[in-house]
Image 1 (cartoon, rainbow, N blue to C red):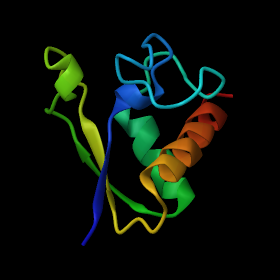
Image 2 (image 1 turned 90 degrees about the vertical axis):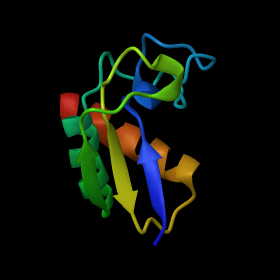
Image 3 (image 1 turned 45 degrees about the horizontal axis):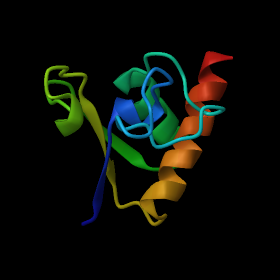
Image 4 (image 1 turned 60 degrees about the horizontal axis):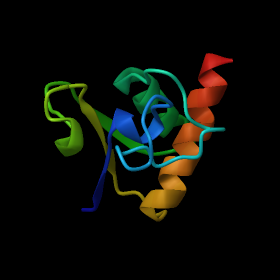
Length: 92
């Protein structure tokens, strides 16, 4: 079973690429929540498991949580880009 880990930092417009953002600024949002990300993962068509009390290693002081994506067939970057598009759409 393949699990991809998706951190909110991947989508945070306040972060630089160096600090962990993985999407272009056009797809980034302010303060993404793990609930938004989990909803977007489900919209893309995968099962999402939310873990709330874990911290992104680059931001170890901020336990923002993470989303585990089960059995994703897509490459991680493709998955992250698709999730970013849905997170942006959820906010519109």
